[in-house]
Amino acid sequence: MILVSACLCGVKCKYNGDDNYCVDIEKLVKENKAIIVCPEQLGGMATPRKCSEICGGSGEDVLSKKCRVIDNEMEDVSQNFIKGAEEALKIAKLYNVKYAILKSKSPSCGYGEIYDGSFKGNKVRGNGVTAELLHRNGIKIFNELNFIEHLNNMVK
Image 1 (cartoon, rainbow, N blue to C red):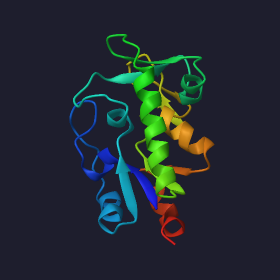
Image 2 (cartoon, rainbow, N blue to C red):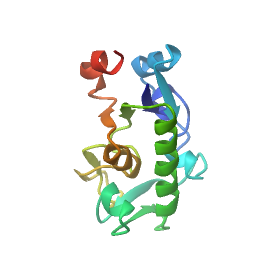
Image 3 (cartoon, rainbow, N blue to C red):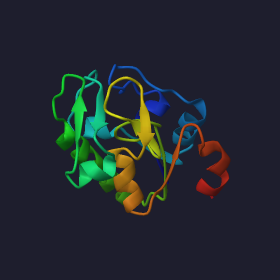
């Protein structure tokens, strides 16, 4: 089973109430090869909500309490992101997930690159909170830009 970011399947759960629809990812869900999660909603955040970024580090640092996730009004929303990551991991374990296709650059789901906390579109190397927790637990992470080249291995 593959875990996917709900916004990639057309669920309007992005911070601004929109989605990041990808037809190929929605197809995996319709074929019962994938399940959807929105870690930010699982963490108790509403949709729409204020834009959030990891400030001063990465998801790894948020999980170890070395930095925070803040919204664009400087409110600390780290606990929502940590709770959402933990809930996503519970679901992944329940469904014996081996792979995840997550939204690139997201403070929850980004893998390899995230926004830097300046709210200016600058990116830095690092993982979002959920991506980091899933990775720590042995789940192979892809995003909407690179999953297609690995799809045959994921659905075997």
